[in-house]
Length: 118
Image (cartoon, rainbow, N blue to C red):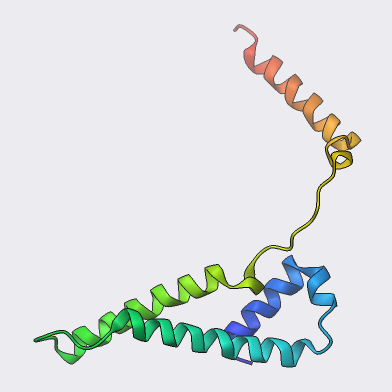
């Protein structure tokens, strides 16, 4: 498993536990996901980098290649569906929870203390 596979695996374990629990073979799934991500990054890097520019030496081209890789990696990882947070449905009941009411009460008390004249 490459580093992208491990990254996605850890993200899903931590931030998408419901989705993670439904994967029958996590090792194979995340190994394949990591390879797919690496390929997408490499392809996008090549598109961003393009051909060497006129009068561009090898060192400058290599440097642009590193920059293109970083940009491609950021774009692919930011948009990848396995690195998105797990969606949860909220209901009106969630907003009426007693703990939320307690927090609002605490915030109101803090605001009163802050707004008291010195």
